[in-house]
Image (cartoon, rainbow, N blue to C red; front, side):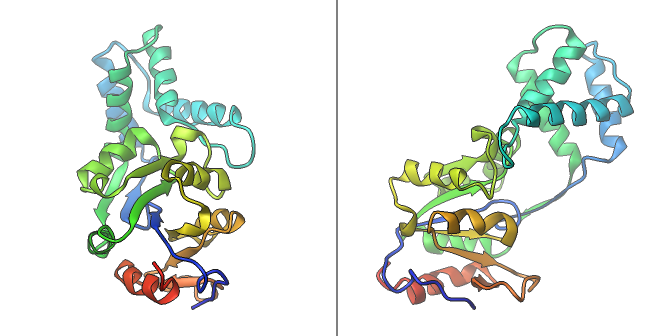
Length: 246
């Protein structure tokens, strides 16, 4: 387990989590052509007619075009805009907002292959909530992720939720973390970030001097030089050990 030079000199007021891969175990497949077959059947009820291969290509093209509008290497899209453009092409007019949301969520539900909380997620959140403010910073599409958090009972834990699609910036850009810290009125050294990906979840917090711990349940990152836990239920003891004033 690595060391962190700030651990002995500060207290932690908030724990901020990543979502997918950290709290939610999910697998999706957006390449499955049967997904687009079903979407095409759905569209016929609105007099929209695409072939499945055509719809799959449109999805990729519009997503790529949206990403080109976002500056820098860590720009993100709002997939709502992608489905809005697809529907506008098919309808020959601007679609109603509700239809765009229904379409996006149908797409997501059809692409999901596995979707559940990790077994350690709820026990850890329940143990931390009485003692720490909790937040969420993650690469996610609001049109999917906000209802998915409700489905799994997560939204009750977090006072601040920052999703990349709401700000058009994704990890590891430091800006996405500062959005949460500003909303919580906290300096970076007063919050601990918890994520599962060394490349996506660590450089951003480190750039703003925010402590970070890696959740590595399967031991995939044995050479990681920073703090590592194997189970989220270790977090209360981890905080007591490394941030004794918390």
